[in-house]
Image (tube, rainbow, N blue to C red):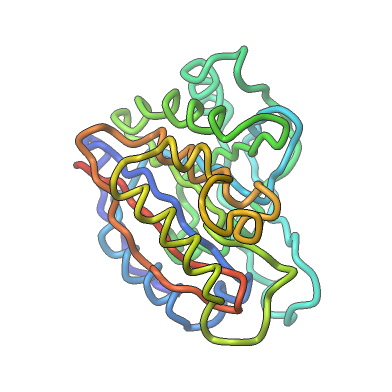
Length: 266
């Protein structure tokens, strides 16, 4: 785990980041993903709080955790004991959560004390912000509405970036566990869908992401929407003068890609 301190500068616009978290083992393996996360931890700014949209918190309606604490959730099964012993559990904040709700609109999102820090969030943040000293506010993905709602969520969150809050989405462009195999790369269909998504993001054709089902191999790349939905939210949180930085642009395990995007106009 990287222990280098992040850059402390909340006066600048904070990034909006979509991270493909991949296998839970990325948390403890010294692989390509975790190496890149640790590298980026050296230059990431220190925000007032991290607003995290998790593909592992799939709900009916849109929810935000409102609490001073964030229980560490091990929502994965059959992995080595070491993975279940990671103590990453940053605080929450009722004051910040209320401000986020006010910014989004109380008619758009509802508070709850359910959930916590799931592995889609902590497996990445433990490398990006290893001290766990920044409050994390968790938002769910709404499985009952279209990706357009998640894009609108991002639009409503966007002003918070200029107030010192980092917007973080954790999921996967391609997340098909039914076709996961113990291989180093991803299948051609997975890479084709991933590249179509990447091309659309770079070209700012966000309507193609909202309507991702029209892209080639979408039915295999996104068999269920939960892990994909944080992406339109992060795109919605970007500004018109920002172009996505693409990183960790590769696939693994047959049915997973790791492609991640950062918007950081500074």
